Amino acid sequence: MPYKNKQDLPDSVKDNLPSHAQDVFKEAFNSAWDEYKDKDDRRGDDSREEVAFKVAWSAVKEVYHKNADGKWVKK
Image (cartoon, rainbow, N blue to C red; front, side):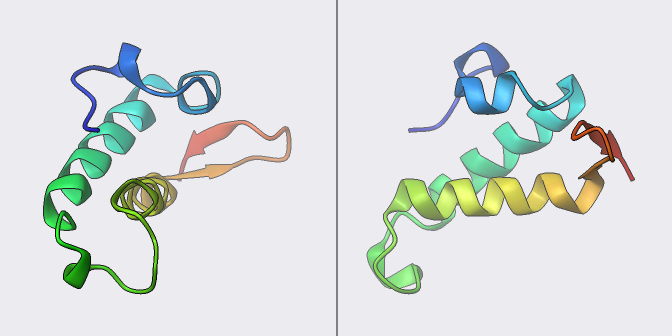
């Protein structure tokens, strides 16, 4: 299910990512949700939601990384 706003994101995202990273996650998730709606467009047996989560976390990791304290910071 796509997310309308950051408040709808899972707690694991809201509680760990800075605000901008949450925006990145939400936009990437929603885009992947639309792009991979057909099972034929996905590799393996991953569900539409699993693929969207993978894409979203990958997008976040393009811009952010975890520092030594385990906090997500911009690269």
